[in-house]
Image 1: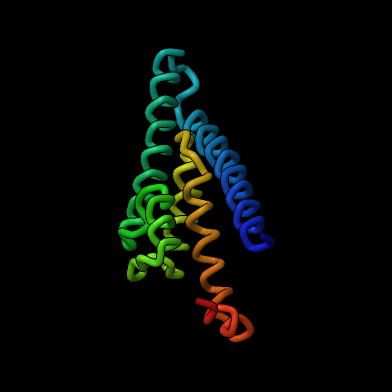
Image 2 (image 1 turned 60 degrees about the vertical axis):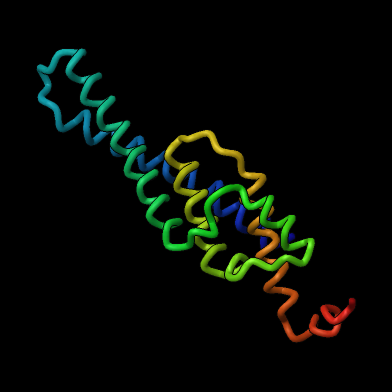
Length: 144
């Protein structure tokens, strides 16, 4: 629970920081325009800059997650398979965890409305699997 809580806190912190960076970027765009620009030109340039910021974050999220195709989707149906002992190779790996967390952070920072519940279920499953692989829990895993 502490690890998942830490990931959630990190997620919210990065989203907040991204908002501050976006505001600074928009300030730079406004200051780069000549002082005599019309309001329509100013608003148009700001709109293009805003959309560009969002698209860059979304593309970065896709490129990050594309390295691990198992990280696409919510992850809940795959977790159901794992619970029923149908193991999917590489599904509960550290790479998938990093892709899921990093992609979720970037997508949420871009402003897209996505649900966090499914990805966090997947993240919690990966964390639990890694904890279960620790030496102290090997005996508990042998239970039929």
